[in-house]
Image (tube, rainbow, N blue to C red; front, side, top):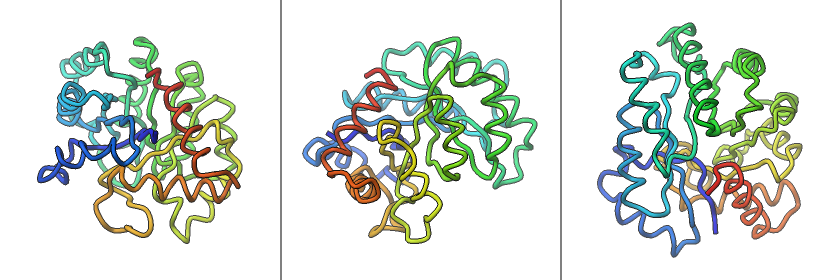
Length: 254
């Protein structure tokens, strides 16, 4: 069964057909989904999805672009969500310099705090890094993030950068971008990264793969991603699905 390691089914893009879509997954070969928090509100909604659907597990964390909403009181509440039975990761957390707000110092402060939280609760991390390659790597190395473990979500950097994360024993979330014609750098990285360190993800409702690029994404598009990885690495499609499922189960302990 396909393991979806990163989606946002709490997003309003699914308000009209969420139930119907989620209940179609099993018959389409999708066995497990990690719904990933990005704000305090989405973390709350993620916990509701975890309760309602047996195949959905959750990650709780605040995306760098949302860290302006954090303070000591609501951070304690966020920490409490880590104790739920089906919380399997802290994320998505990290740095995003694509947008000017909040300022990098705020992002770095709460990135470090959430890394520390993950260490304390003994959960892996889901890392978001956009246009912040050096600062993300520097902080993770300084904080010995390899001792925590986790996945670099929507990996988009070079194979040389991938080597640094492999040295920390991290996994790599590969999504729809791998199917884009102009994704040469990512294809080279995926060719280099061992299949035992790759997870399948969609980041739904974002980043739909070809041939559905530009449309609302969902886990139903995961076969396109697995097929592209299989072609790049000269593996059978079924082999990619099976290995990435075992990788995700190992990382998230489900």
